[in-house]
Length: 249
Image (cartoon, rainbow, N blue to C red; front, side, top):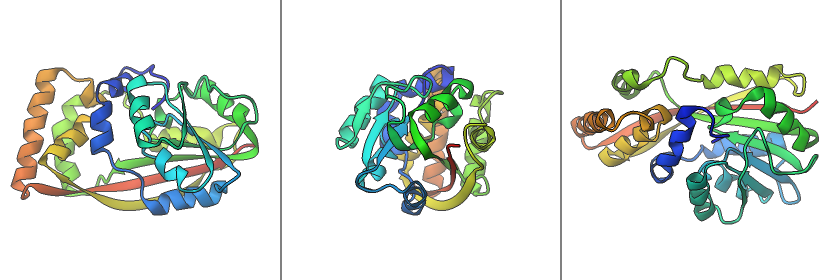
């Protein structure tokens, strides 16, 4: 997550434990591609910015690089510290990174870049990166072509705000910045298996659902459980993972 400015982004603090239980990690192939492009290995330092509960942080630790995880939300950061004790967890935001100039070799952003105030955040990312350092953005998106997600999309449509950020659109701001070079893009697919409880919690962890009134959330919870029961009590939840890499200029 990022600086808690957008009302929806603040709602993650209400569901930090749900986020940790129900959200998947990132596909190993996607993390491997990031590690290769950013040259992550022992002796290198990577900043995981807007680290949330550490879904990406713990995968980065496996590269052997030193991992610094920055997260503004206290509840999210507490989950991160439990899940990824090998990382250095700091309170901070993309707009105010608590690190000195030229202090990291690479930056990763998992599921958070669309919450950043880019006019402030992009100079901050550039400031803490060493010359030529790279930035990787990654999102686990629900696969829009999957019939399950089309049904879920109809159920959550009333919750979606008109100004909802678009991950693909926002990522272009990195590559179009004078501070960073062109974007490299890769896409990966994977499936998360969920029972009725986890399906309900997975959707409850969506920012605009978490921010909704309690009666609406309860009704949605019941609808999602009925979907899972109709499909045999367990569902395949397909994702399309989008990854973008750019280097400082």
